[in-house]
Structures are given as structure tokens and as C-alpha cells.
Length: 461
Picture (tube, rainbow, N blue to C red):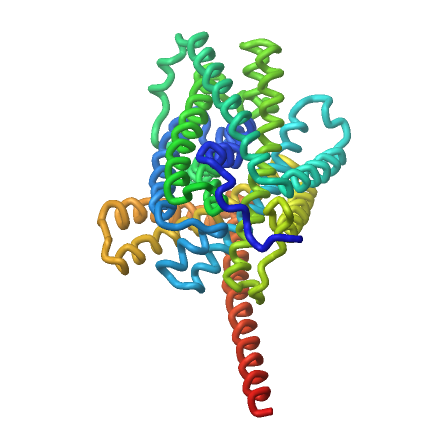
């Protein structure tokens, strides 16, 4: 018989750290995100990442504060509703649910397609990427319908392997090219352009991706905050270090190669560390994309379940949960939607540019929800009489202002086509969330009125 609830207490702190690492996909990020970032920031890529990470720490600090008091399969809805009410809470949850689905298509499906396209001879026919995304979607769906700890324990093992490998090889590259270390002085703040900042922040996206699994952990308000801190340290260090090592290898004069060579990170490993290391990196990159797909599937499944559990989407019926504790319909819905988005964007722009197009859209959605929950934290803290200026106002305020500036600047610059369209589509999604809330609310009110009338008439009879 099907259950009606998730499996509480199934995950440990290390399981949630594994989910966070998989959501970020360090090896995949180094492969895909850094290439896109380099095209907008040049040799200053590492400096952009460093500044982005500092801002991301402020953003994640808000989620860290919320995670100490709230656990929910739809945390972004819960965070926003506690300070700003159910309406804003629903919109915030809606945004993040769509964000996960767009990320599934943009980073996971098109990301792995773009990577395979960059390997000469692997994808001989342009249509092969269609086969790849369909097969990967089915595989992710099959795994996500199994017990969640099956995937998270795999994530933590392979995630740590990725991190250790990237750290060790980055240090080796820095040692081999130590005479180039003086080039670091040529990095400067002028490289911090809005789209570069958006992509830089996105390179750390996924660190808070463990929160939708919070209600399935053994001690949510203790293990989740700790997991966020561990994930922040591990992922932040490895991505910045890997970026720095690759930049130093090329130096400012040869850094143009980073934007013209297919998969420059893989090329650097093969050329300067040898085929043994490049093959290992290849395996880890493919695993990283695949892990990200499954981890993202975990999240959009929980988000839909959590939002439905609160009576939104027009019904108080909770989606059916299978014998493994996984909501089945939300998992299938998210997989089919993510696949459709990937096929559409990839057909229009090609796998690589289509991936970046969707990643910019996903980033805008994510940052919009971050702004909402940051404001909510200050209001909620004031309501309960625990408002602290630095913790609840200053840090969230600075992070929100930076995100607003980056979003608005991208939206009004036509020279960033087609990425400014990503912002426009993000706005459409947010507005659709507002409309969906009012439709849902009226539907619930209609059912309540109908039930009242039926009871009233039955009583008279």
C-alpha cells in the first residue's frame, strides 16, 4: 500500500552534504560554467569567482539562518510565508520549483550534451544529443524513484572523489607553472560585469540544494545548517582553486585559448598532466553531470510535494508516495518538463548556448526567490522580537541589492541577446506563479463554499 509521507530520519548529515555536492557538480561546473564565465571575464575569471563567492556566502547565510528554525520539503515556500504570508510563500516556492526543472534541463541535460559535443569524434551526428538527453532523463527518473539514501550516499562518495581529485591536480598544476604565479597581479575589479557576476554566482549554485531534503534528515534543524557550512567550504574552495590553476597555466597572454578551445579544462589536463589524468577527469565530469540530474530530480520532486501538501495546486490531496518514500507523479512531471525545455532550447540555440540560456534563466529565478526569503527573514525576526541588525538586515540587504542590480542590468541591455530574453522569461514565470496562486486560492474557496452548502442542506434534510 502506498504511503502518504516522506521517510523522516532516513538521511544523515553526510547524505545531505552529498546532495549539495551533486547539485553543484564541481567537475561539471569546472567543465561548463568556467568556459561561459571566461568569455565574459577573460583572465579575471578567478577574481570574478572570488567576489561572487563572497556575495554567495551572504546569500547562503540567509538560508543557513532559516534552516535552523524550519524544515520542509518545500523550504523556499515556508521561508517566505513565515514572514510575508502564504501568497508570497507560494510564489517563492513556485519560482524554486521551476528553477529546479530549468536547471535539470539546462545544466544536467544540455550540459552533458555540450560536453560530449566538445569531444571531437564522440558526437558525429548533430541529432545524437537528442538520444543522450532522453536516455539520461529516463535513467535519472528510475534512480530518483528509489530510496533517497541510495543516491545521496553515492553522491557523497563520488563527490569527495571529485573534490579531492580537482584539489590535488590543481595544486600540481600550480606547482608546475609556479613561475606564472606573478600573473595574479594583473587581475582587477573592472572585470565584474553583471552577466559575469550572474554566472560567477551560478558556479556555486546548489550549495543550498540540500534544503528540500531537510524533513527526511535525522535532525533537520541541526544537521542541515552544518551541512550547508561544510558544503560551502568544500565547493567554494575547489571551484576557486581549479579556476586559479587553469588561469595560471595559460597566463593572460594565452588566455584567449580558454574561449576558443573546446573544453579547455579537459585540454589542459591532457596536455600538461597526461592522458591518465585527463581520462579520470573525463569520467568524473560525466558522473558529475549525471549526479546533478538525479540531485535536481530529488529537489523538484520534494518541492511539488511540499507545495501540494499545503493545499496549493487546487487540492489538499497529497501526491501519492511509493513504497520507497518518493512522490511518483511530481518526479515524472518534473522529468518530462525538464526534458521538453532542454529539447526546445537545444534545438533553437544548440546544446552549449541553449544550456547557458537556461542557466541564466535559472539563475534569475533562484536569485528572485533568494531576495524574497531574505526580506522575509527580517520581517519574521521582527515579528518574534529577535531582530538583529547585522544578521537579519545588513547581510540579507547587501546580498539582495547586488542581485537586484545584476538582474536589472542584464534585463535592460540588448547587447546581451539572447540572455536578456532569459530574464524576460523569468519574469513571465514569476507572474505565472502569482496568477497560479490566485487561481488556487479561488479554487479552495469555491470548494469550501460548496462543502458548507452541502452540510447546511444535509442538516436541514
